Picture 1 (cartoon, helix red, strand yellow):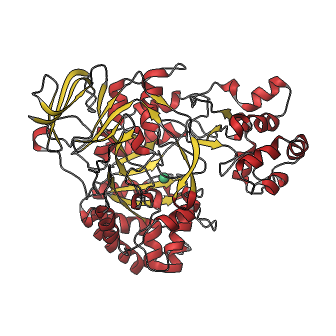
Picture 2: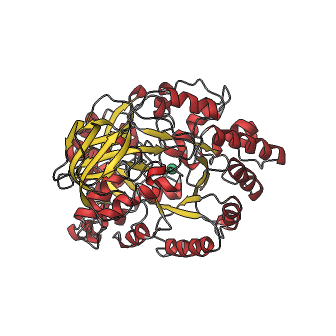
Picture 3: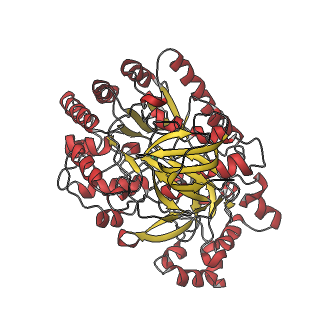
Amino acid sequence: MHDLVIRNGKIVDGTGAPAHFGDVAIDGGVITSVGGTAGAGRREIDAEGLLVTPGFVDIHTHYDGQVTWDPYLTPSSWHGVTTIVMGNCGVGFAPVRRGQEDFLIGLMEGVEDIPGAALAEGIKWGWESFPDYLDTVAAIPRAIDVGAQMPHGSLRAYVMGERGAHNEAATPTDIQRMAVLVREALQAGALGFTTSRTMLHRAKNKEVVPGTFAGEDELLGIGRALGEAGHGVFEMASDLVGPDATMEWMVKLSTETGLPITFALAQIDKDPNGCQRVIDQVKRFNAAGAHLSPQISARPTGMLMGHESSLHPFITHRTYKSIAHLPIDERVAKLREPAIRAQILAEGPSVKDRATRHFVTNFSKYFPLGDPPDYEPERDANLAARAAREGISPAELAYDMMLEREGRALLYMPLANYAEYNLDALREMILDPVTTMGLSDGGAHCGLICDASMPTYMLTHWVRDRSRGARLTLETAVQRQTTDTANLYGLHDRGALKPGMKADVNVIDLEGLKLHAPKMVFDLPAGGRRLIQHADGYRYTVVSGEVIYENGTPTGALPGKLIRGPQPAPVAAS
Ligand SMILES: [Zn+2]
């Protein structure tokens, strides 16, 4: 008698192999047979007409704080994600010295737009070293598996104090001390080391993330600690300028250690072909022994502008600022007053920062998001084009659209991957085996972005609904976010439905799979806001053989674990 049998499903096993029909049997938290007809199970799930896939592995999240208070790590787990990797982009909460907590919260709040008050109330500090943090995370019951990475920002502040926090150059002693701690963290089970090398990532006080300007000595000094530990991914958010443009240090480090380096890559408006050049460059380096993988997303990073968001076209207007403190319904009532409307529209944005000014005025990249949300809208649906057709100003159009849905309507501004007003270039990147899917930023950018639903989008848009160009096969869409993401992190025990593998499984009604429009809720600790997005159609999500969600409702089972280090492939599956 098996513990659990999932019967008669359409099995897409995550390896890229063609879908086939049959049963999946599970015993002791492990898959014991795939395909054919399995014997009886103590519990049986009828998957007739349903899709059976491995649980999704999301390698790019920022749940470092949430992981201490939310066993479900939503929204990710609502989208079939059974493993997350956190600690990305150089920000996190360990190591930490007493007295530095607020600094790390400010860094996370600034860079990742997670409300500081929520983090301050939610996190119950009680660790100092990274291994202590891992022990704390490991001791908390949870529904899905989590893996942690050592962030450069907290490490630098810990080792170098104010000098580290303010991005002064590291001395050889500093580097040596950081390397020791990284090695310790990796040995205790950290899955990698992460850093931020982009000017876009700034703390609340506007300082860039500690480590942003780290020189080759520091990067290699720390990176070699991964080599000494024998495992770990080096992840970074980089603008790929300066020393990163040639990738020389990355090639050197990954060739020497044999360990992967992954960095965010997206198509930008100013240079639509730039990402392809980077991919070609990476392929040449990899052919010569490097191990680089550009990390890409499944859709444009979607800035969602609305009256409850942290950014929108009117947020810097003087008159808007004077009513911004009002609760949303009162504010909306005011905004509907013709005099206020006229006054705000007569004012321009009062912001000096060029990037922000661009974001709040770039109406040719604004679209109504709609419900169901449309992340690949036609070019002529942009607000500038539409306003021109209607003979009004784009700001006026944006103003009125944002007042729809009781003032909760969201405008979608694709931040990247939309240079040509379609996702054709992104599709090429998704299909390129040198890239890895990531960048969902689960748990982060709470006031502006909600892309943790990317696993669902891979199935709804890329496999089923896309009408503006070629789609992806089901097999590819599943493989890209299971086997491929798991492999980059050395998690060879999951990501595929094969005997011996960890029994992390989704049973999905693909025809009924539906991505809801994102919405703002205030359910973080201290009433903190975050954008969330639900999906219908996940019939069962199984972690280590236990059903954690049934038709979107948590069952109460908490089989999730902290992952310590890379996991070998089971003998039976290799
Ligand atoms: Zn990130």
